[in-house]
Length: 298
Figure 1: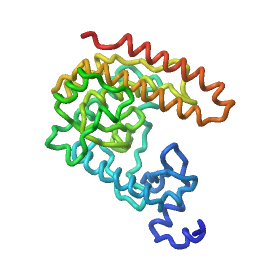
Figure 2 (figure 1 turned 135 degrees about the vertical axis):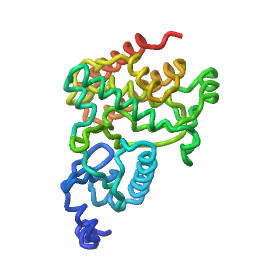
Figure 3 (figure 1 turned 90 degrees about the vertical axis):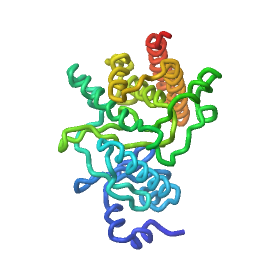
């Protein structure tokens, strides 16, 4: 088996420079910043160099590079990657906070509205007409769903004009760049063709999840108006979203996020689970109550 030292010795100059960086481990990636660039290695193992050469990581990195190049063609507010080196995508460094941190810091009302308006304007740009969705596959909502749609929802989805759906479009994946003075989107996850209501609902739930986690709070973040947010999107996109579909995807996204949180909790140490379980139940109970109270009346 090839040792880490052997792998390092065999690296080309550009990859040796990547390996020399001080990477920080995240849930799905290794990240580092150097010389005005942001380096992201797709993570599957416990060593960044191992993931740099892992075939699955390389395939995922190439897909993200291609997706971001395509999305940048729809909006200059998508952070365009500079290059991809095996399992590492190299982006220009964005010097400001992400939108989650900016909103969590309790900004003035005008600043908060500006952040949300920028996000909705960008989402509307990415929801390109079907002629500009490239070769992305059509999402199967019957199979690829945490809340199986009933007959009425399936009929509405079938009749709806399709757009791109970008599963990474959440508040934490928008970052401010102080140099250029604007917000950029930077982590697409998966891109398919689907209905725009899914992306809007996911963004709403990501707002409610701002206070979730170790650095968060006991109460879910709700310092926004969904009606105002919807109006921002519909003005920017010149379209009207289907309120029945919005209600469905709001419920579905809560189910999905709760399932992910429970899976992560089960993987923790037993002592952490004792503390984490009541917190999880309390937090999602708040979100479910908010969702019920703010469901669109039909």
